[in-house]
Length: 83
Image 1 (cartoon, helix red, strand yellow):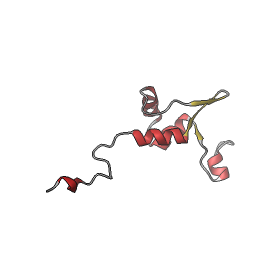
Image 2 (cartoon, one colour):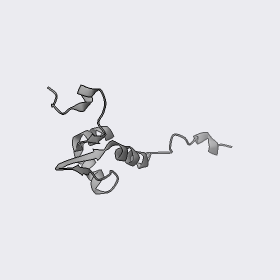
Image 3 (cartoon, helix red, strand yellow):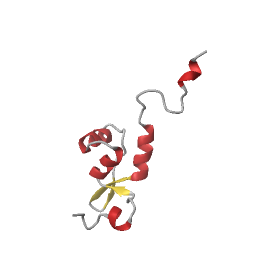
Image 4 (cartoon, one colour):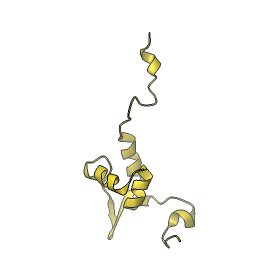
């Protein structure tokens, strides 16, 4: 059963404002790890609408782009260093 305010299913699009659990899911991580990223600044702080705490999907996108790669970024060609 879906919540009455679940706009993603009823309107066919993802809302711009995401709950904590939705924001963590958007990042592909657990809510507790997401909390850690928010605390240390790797993920953005939430916005507030009345008593609701929400994360802006655009802020999440920008933060995700700043996360480091495990190794060289994909636009780096490892063969560039070969003579």
